[in-house]
Length: 295
Image (cartoon, rainbow, N blue to C red; front, top):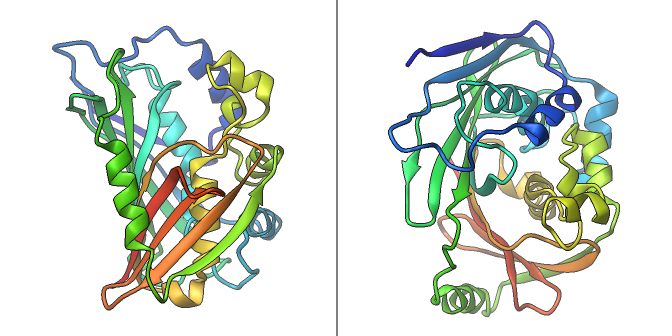
């Protein structure tokens, strides 16, 4: 099993990659006896465009700033993620992978005009009762040092596996954690077109997010919001000042947000950091939960 190393002078086109992912004939799970090799993609000179940054900030709710929003490096790295997943060496079907967890560590503010180096890699997988778990690692560096890192965790579900009967109780317990003095509550709309707006700002044109017809083709009753939009919008609600320039953010993606809808956001602070929860307007379904900790 040979390692795969990809190096780019310009970002690969996600629009060109998506048809290969949609029409590919790989199995849903990595076959028994097969491993995922080390696959790396990198681009050593990555610059940003003010117009794209502004569009991203607007759709995600961040204030315009001289520094990149905490989630924006993920947008810069996404073409490299897809380049890795579209490689023949990656042995499983990409369409159907579920983004279940994310962890971001930012070691300091990143100026909008900073020239960055981005390296992404994936290696092997973990078998669980629910399916197979893959971790996409992203490392963003300046000329001096690593400034931002992330691990995006994906699940390829096994057919016939049902969610645990304890799921409802766990969700209720999470809501109870926020039912106390000091919890800040807010709400916002997730309109039908937010998937298209985020796609235009981020370049992520996965059809499950764009419209009801394209989502139905892939098995969803309606278009669903990008998970990374939900996370970005949540962190924008907390605010960069509260997050701090040096921060670690861990979150779990729960139920998808079917568009259009309205959502409720809860946040509470303690000595360790800020906990947050994104749920439906009625407070019955959890879409996302997470924790921010200053480092």
